[in-house]
Image (cartoon, rainbow, N blue to C red; front, side, top):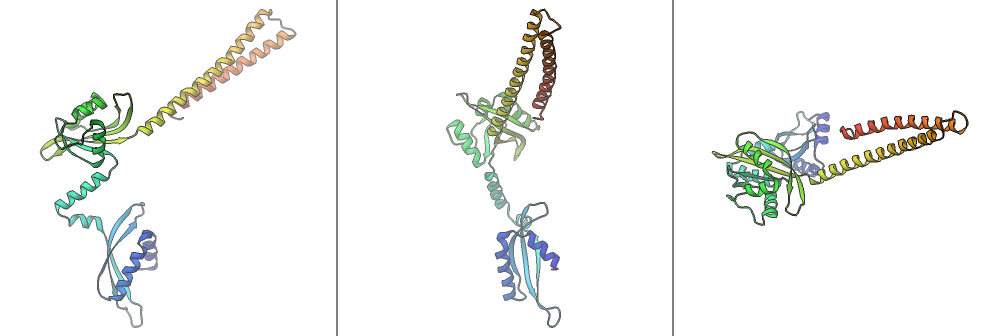
Length: 285
């Protein structure tokens, strides 16, 4: 490996793997000609960390008096690992990934019966039914009672081959509400048409959005109140001017000029309020 190649390899190597690499190189030095296998984590140019498998061996010097070299060949271990696994092991591995997701995920048959579910779905279903889910148990009524008929309509769409992604609200009998990002996709469990459902709790996000929307209305109302007060003062002063006969000399003339100034400022303020509201309610705020 050239100096440049070594530098690229060193930058890509996960910091925790330096001791592993050093132990592998020492094993090569101690057993010239033997292959030493090691697994190392590397980071690619996109920033993704991947597991690689390396086979290394110490080669004799190319010339008399030269230095021995370590020959190394690396491959992506995940692809090779999966290719070598029997179907049962792949299913177990898939279940591990399925259970690791923070989203509640389950599969329903065409009449709402559970076909399978992940670990997160167990607690989600138990919290709403009071029972642990079982394969074959019906979840259709529970979903309809909590989410409403719109989600059931989307399940029917998915059974017909049309998936959907969106947000929906779960309502408790006591009035409490939760929001979820709901993904419903067509799925086949063997020959049986089913739907897969994924639920991600976005309640904190929706609560923040509601608070932001409320603050926009508060700002708008405060601005409108201020504008109304300014225009009210202008009208009051104009009424006073009219009651005084509207004289063009002395204090009356000064009052008339002040009313004109206030009305102009109120017009400018009204335009500014309109622009602020446009930013607030057009998605720019």
